[in-house]
Amino acid sequence: MLESLGLDPVEERVYRFLVTTVEAEVADLVGNLGIDAETAETVLVSMRVRGLVRTVGPGRRRFTAVAPDIVLGSQLLRHQQALDWARREVDRLSEEYRDGARRRDAGRLVEVLPNRVVLRDHLDHLQENARREVLCLRQGHAVVPPAEEDLAEPDALRRGVEYRVIYERLLLEEQDMPANVAYGVKLGEQARVAPCLPVRLTVVDREVAVLPVAREEGTSEPAAALVRGGQLLEALIALFEGCWERATPLRIAEDGALTEGTRSCPLGSDDLSLVSLLVAGVPDKSIATRLGVSQRTVQRRVSNIMELVGARTRMQLAWRAATEHWL
Image (cartoon, rainbow, N blue to C red; front, top):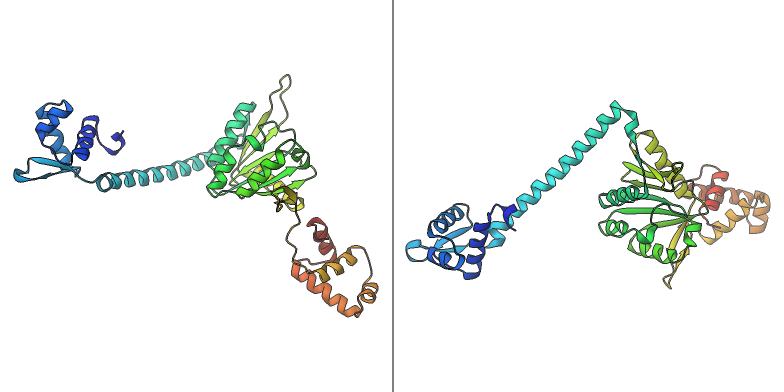
């Protein structure tokens, strides 16, 4: 069990014995562990040189174990540091390998995953190794197990990985699906809903994407594409971000149910009333009459609202109000 820390089986037996007996001499090891005196002497000398045991008592013929958290804890820390370094090196070498492969063969940018099992395994592996962010478009009629069977996401959320997920409304009509989405939101998932989605997509750390493609002729098994880097991946990320901007946020109501919420609106009620008149196409002069102010005041307030929300034109202001459900 302690071989990874440099102890062979005999040394481990001796060390464990000394830990429990506090002090012992060669004869004690011979009688209790069933090893000969020469072996016991050799093992103790080796372990003393390595700092695992020390001699005590008159004549220094008795031995005691050095505290495990001191001698083994430091070794364990060094092993962990070496493992972390090796993991970083593997990641770096893998990225260099993929870069080289892409330069040699553009076809390596896309790998075909031939069936549902391989697709599920890849999705689990990618999420288990996600470091920063996972982006998902989740359609109805999934070709892989849906979110309630996805055990990788809760673990990743607990590790601090950010999830942004857009659900197709049809998917939320499936039994138990709202409760499962609500569970993810409680764990930290940012969820939104859209009337329909163009594709089912998962993007991990903006480095790799997985999306199903057409079923192969003559088989019920779906195939999928694994996309690594390049402009195709950038296009898929842009597709997600566009869908995200148009989707409606999902939130948890006071009773714990999943509901559609509105995005945070920077405008007060008076400004929203003014924007609603603009969206309805009411001229500035008529708005001024309704509000009992001058036309110049209306124009100044509109300019202030546009600056507040980052809109350069009135059309952009109306578009934001509509798409972000302020009205």
